[in-house]
Amino acid sequence: MLLNASGCLDALTAPEVARSLDAFVTKTITPEPRGGNPPVRIAETEAGMLNAIGLANPGRERFLAETLPRLRGLAVPVWVSVGGFSAAEYAETCAALDGVAAIELNLSCPNVDEAPESAAAIVAACRAATTLPLYAKLSPAAWDIAEGARAVEAAGADGLSLVNTLRGLALDARTLRPTLARGTGGYSGPALKPVALAAVYACAEAVELPIVGMGGVRTGLDALELLAAGASAVALGTILFSDPSAPERIRSELAAEAAARGHSDPLEARGLAHSSLQMGVSHLGNGVQKVPGNGRKVTA
Amino acid sequence: MRRELCSVAGSEQLGPYTLLRVARGSLDPGEPGQFFMLEAPGRVLPRPMSVCLAPAGELGFLIDPVGPGTRALCALEAGDELHVLGPLGNGFDLAVERPLLVGGGIGIAPLPYLSRRLGGPPAILGFRSDWHAEAAALLPGAEVCIEPAYVTALLPDEPHDVLACGPEPMLAALRALVPEAQLAWEAPMACGYGACYGCAVEIEGELRRLCVEGPVLAARKELVAVSN
Image (tube, rainbow over all chains, first blue to last red; front, side, top):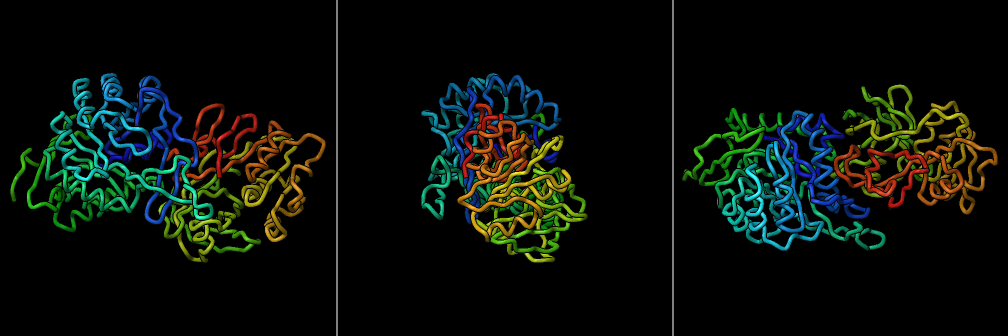
């Protein structure tokens, strides 16, 4: 139930880190190759970091021909993050994917122009193109993220990935000009944790879908809080940059934090932050795996 | 790569720079030109530092306190602990016949370790001021020039295998004069091991990760988009 956040790990350059996760999520794949934004592309801030990488990736064809076969060789379940600049582009990539554990639709990259269609329209197009589990990665910048969650659920999403980064700006202290060449970037790290908790909490109330929670997780307790807010899996992002051994540490901390509260399995803490419990299915691993619960919302 | 909690053995001032020495535990010092990510106290991200010295049981890093992370590292005292990850990246190719080391400013950082591994070849160092040039003590016998004099004016006429690290204008000037030189570049990076894609530079027409492809690159490779 520990994953990496898309774009925060390259399993081919750090296979041992990928193997310490329950599933590896790729950097977002677009139909055409992308070099990404010009440097400078990252900036540290007081309580997090900004990135404006710009979906650098080898493009769909090279990914399918070269990258994916090598990823399969790692013996870690692979989730493919899919991006695009129209619903048709997303759907074409989904249709071309086979034999992966899940697809995560990156519907919320703050560093590139968005597709003109709504998130729900993109999910609907992808739903028609694949039977693979579809996770919708939503932006925390929406005023009512639960409304977006309901819309993608109705469009056929199998799960939610919450949250992507928030748009932020850093200025160079000397020149007072933007540090990043693109200007703004996606804000991640410790400052994002309360934002992620709020999004997971709101969406867990609104929909029946399993949720991968992410945003500022540094410790096992952070992960446990996301489970309590309603997530059934947790992804690590910025922490991987400073500590590639974080998955192992957070996994053992999570077990200890759950045990200290009387839970032999951390998933028993799922939804505890709510007055009502909500359970669903998880697509971790190679197929559909039940997590505890009966699939219905239960009033406690 | 390994990540260990290391304790600070001590630190010394060399002009504006700090030579931070840490007990290396079971960390491999790596090859000259390779680097480590040093946990910067109180900061979100670690900082990349090339190995300056690798005496028995220690790793030495030469640090220029230019921002909050490097200032926090320079403030560390003997007995303080920090996480150290590495060695990372590709170092210098040591199979050279007539090595000549060239360094500028904080870019001299990888040269003392490189010099020891190559048996003390000739070296040319350039600095902004006499104060900055105090760091030349790390390379006894090196020729030193102070701005407005530049290292390129001190290059000998006879051919050498140039191994260099320094500010981008210096590396660009060297590349023009010595096309086959090995040059160590710098870019802002969050992770140092290929995960963040922050340190992208343009190499042979494509944006590549400097931490994976470098930081030492042969000069013939076109490197265009390094900034900062």
